[in-house]
Amino acid sequence: MFNIRLNNVTDVVTSNKTSFNMFCENAQKGNYLTLLPKTSKKGEAYFWVTAIEKGNGTSEFKLAVNQPILDAVMTYIFGGKLTNVDVINPDEDLDTFSKEWSNFALELHKAELSKGKTMNRTFLTKGLKISSFYKKGVIVYEPNKNLELKTYIQVA
Image (cartoon, rainbow, N blue to C red):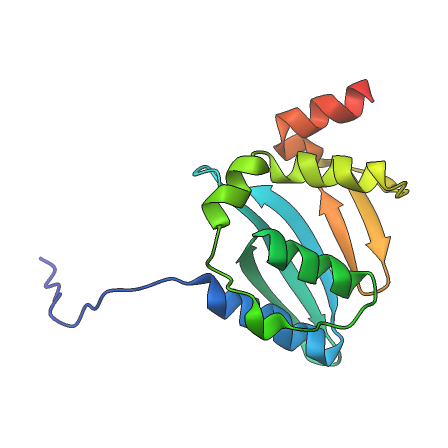
């Protein structure tokens, strides 16, 4: 029989602030980012971020997205400098943003195409991957894991 002690359990509060701080730290170091836009089952828009650290391996984290965070991420991967990130509230308007971008990967893909971005298609055994490369990062789309995106790509 197992003896489980629960008297040391404390409430765990998860905040997007930690993830946003990780993004800012990686940006300050100039690390290259791989971004997978996703929508959770709860409808939350987020990036799965893999930061390739110079000489130190990689780090991965989930970064929920609101409009100021999306702007900061795109500014950084375009090769720009992060400014005024201290005024960004990483936990503000996440629900509103997620409702507006109900399928984050599809909407971001459409936005990139509307700006004339050329994307690379790679056919793997796991399925198609579409990548858009920038100076300090790459956005990777996985249409086989997103039926709406897959349909949109097949029709377009």
